[in-house]
Length: 167
Image 1 (tube, rainbow, N blue to C red):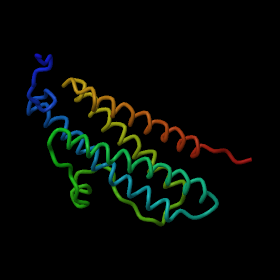
Image 2 (image 1 turned 180 degrees about the vertical axis):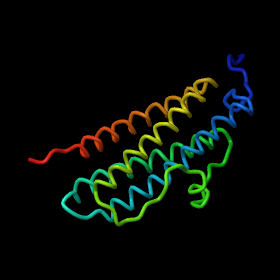
Image 3 (image 1 turned 90 degrees about the horizontal axis):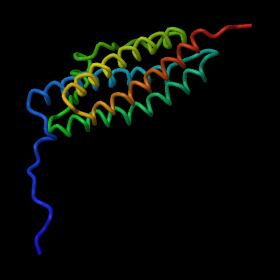
Image 4 (image 1 turned 45 degrees about the vertical axis):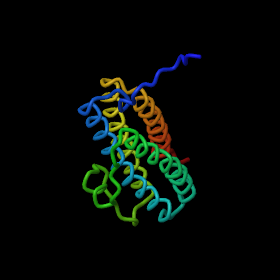
């Protein structure tokens, strides 16, 4: 009985070296920014004080819990291409446009920082999506599009909070 399946060699997802390098570099830059953002979220979660404590405490916890999953998926996507994601905190800080802040901030300042950082993350995710799309990498494009939706949703929530009106 003859088998209908023929063995096909694995070709690194069909991407050539240059395409892989472009995609991985974008993913790794996004990873570095997301890691710094993740730690900023934890800082704000732990250290927010005042009448807005529960609002900021709850949203930052939701965002860093989701962030941990997203960070893992980005790093694993880099591994799909046979590369090693950045893993040192010092390298994250060097690669990241998002910067650390102190813990002694008002809730309003924390929210302004998070809004700015979400815009940065969305920009990096969009750049990564565009490079992935140009190279026919549907998996990374799909992942980035989902991240962009998440960043935009959190941006909207925080922007709405920062524009709250007092009676």
